Image (cartoon, rainbow, N blue to C red; front, top):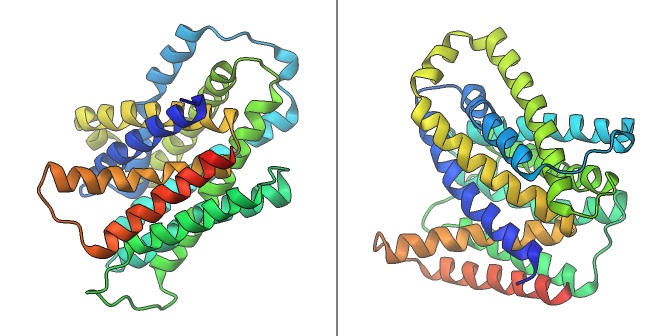
Length: 294
C-alpha cells in the first residue's frame, strides 16, 4: 500500500473517534474548552512521539516562512475546530455539515491556485465525484433543509475554508524543512503546532472561561481519550500531507463516512438508506480515482 494512503486511513478513522469524544464533552463544556482538551491532553503524547523518533534537527531550516506557516495553520485549525464543535449544537446541523464537506473542493482549488499543487484531469474528476457523494450522504430526503443564510451555513463554510488552508499550510511547512524522511518532517511540524495551539487555547479559555479549566481537569479520562485519538489522527494527517498533495489526502480521507456507516450497519444493525448507499459508492469511486491518478 502506498504510504500516504495508509497514513490517511489512520487519520480518517482516528478523526471519527476524536470528534465523537469532543461532541460528548461539549454537552457540559464550551466549544473552546472542548477544543482545548484536544491539545492540552495531546501535547505530552506529541512530545513523546517526537522524542521516540529523534528526528534530525537543522536550525537553518527553521525559516521565518516556516514559522509563519505553522502559526497560521495552528490558528486556523483552532478556529475551524471551535466552529465545528459549535455547529454540533445548532438545530440546522445537517445543512452546516453539508457545507463543511466543500472542504475537499476548496483544498483542490486553493492548492492549484496558490500552492502549486496542480491536479490532473482524473484527480479533478475524483474530487468532484467524492464531493457529490459526501453531499448525498448528508442529504436526507425525509427532512427539509431550510436553505437560509443562518449560523449553520456560516460555521460550515468558515470551518471548511479554515481546515482547507490548514492542510495546505501544513504541507508547505513540512516540505520546506527539506528532510528526506517525511515522518520526521511531519512530526517536527506537528509538535511545534500543538505547542502553539495549546498555549493559544489555554490563554483564551483562561481569559474567557477560566472556571471551565477545573471542570475539564475533572473530566481527565475523556480529555485524555480525545487527546490521544486527536494526536494519532494528526500524525496520520501531517505525514500524509507531507507525502502527497493535500487535495488527494482530503479526498481519500472522506472514506471516514463510509467507515461510520458500515459500523452502524454491521455493529448496531442500523439500516442504511438508499441515498446513503449511493453516497458511499460515490465516495469510494472518488477515492479510487484519486489513487489511480496518483
